[in-house]
Image 1 (spheres, rainbow, N blue to C red):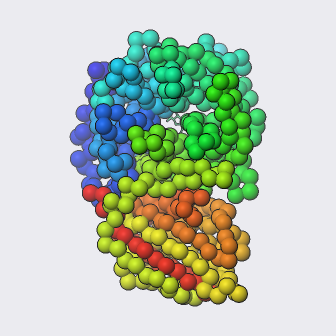
Image 2 (spheres, helix red, strand yellow):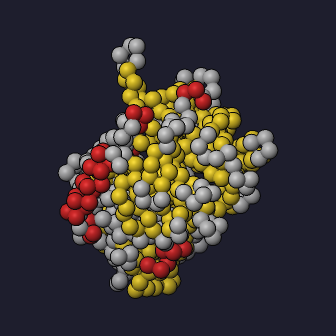
Image 3 (cartoon, helix red, strand yellow):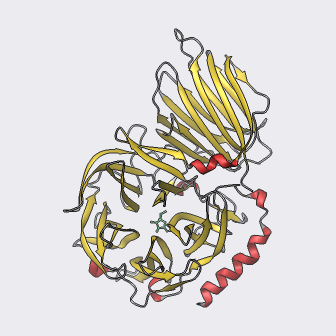
Length: 495
Ligand code: FRU
């Protein structure tokens, strides 16, 4: 084991003891210590889910990337394991960037990741050279492959940038061979996804450009994922620098889901529909797993690159993952539901039926920061539909975060301006939602520092973090007009 890896393991073991459990989310995975970004290597190995993540243990801001590592049996109770990868080889000395995992036929756990090494150019500028590398292990300790890198500039098609070539996502096909998609861009910084194949997971060949952005969705495409779901083919990707289109793609570095058809023989992807994956503020770089029971489950990094530099460097940890979500495709759209295991964390049910109100409403027993809240909202008067409905949470006299629905616009807005930020700039986002006569269903999951709302059984999801002081635990409702509502609320206990 290298000294760099040994140092990281020692450091995290000592430092994590200084972080109280209560200062973390209860059932969302957060950085063991320091900084966390993208989920990596999401896989099921030796009876457990493994989730690795982009990790800089020494600081709560981004730095030279390691791979953090956690395991879970239900994707809600996580156990942190020692750092899996450290930047300790010539080809990854400036970072072990994102990648994925698979189980080899001989039972070993294979990781594929992007190795980064800086190179000074003839004009004096310094660029990151990015190659794809392999490490193999037993679920705890990983050894880097002697043949690394397994994909480098010689494996790129003409015109491809070797400085933006990252985030391999691999899978094993029905004939036992391997495929892998990698994010890349051309000389003009226009994103595309390259497809590679391998017989054994170690020796890779360039197949083709699977899809090119052609200047439509942002610039460089990061963190691709590509899979079959409900008879359709789905590409998930996180484009940088997106230009908003209507209410889609507002997050700068945002998320994109393209649904289409795939011809496996010719490996041709035909696009049909596109949409954002998440319509909130904090969601990026999601990765999926095909769970042993056949569910396609997705986890994203629940932060946004444009707001990650606002926190103090004294914070002991920064960065959390989204709730794991079960995916499906219905009527050409991606649907997401919280994993069903979440229901095992429910405690202390509180129920209200058919409550009609026209202004501010507070209900006994409805408060908290670890909450599963189901709301069915209707117009109190169908002839005269209300103008606005809002649910406000993480609330006290000073603070609140809210979801508000305006039936006449058919929009749902998240607003976390009043969550303690002294930089209340990027704090709102709206999504179109289905709306017949002011009816909407919201399932809101709160976990200390985050809120995720699943709209109309998962047709849209809006995720947001809020680092509001935990003493702000009020929940209230607001109606402009007459609203009739059913409420079911549970506390969620993950520890
Ligand atoms: C996406 C990303 C990846 C890269 C990693 C570096 O958030 O920029 O493309 O591998 O983060 O930490």
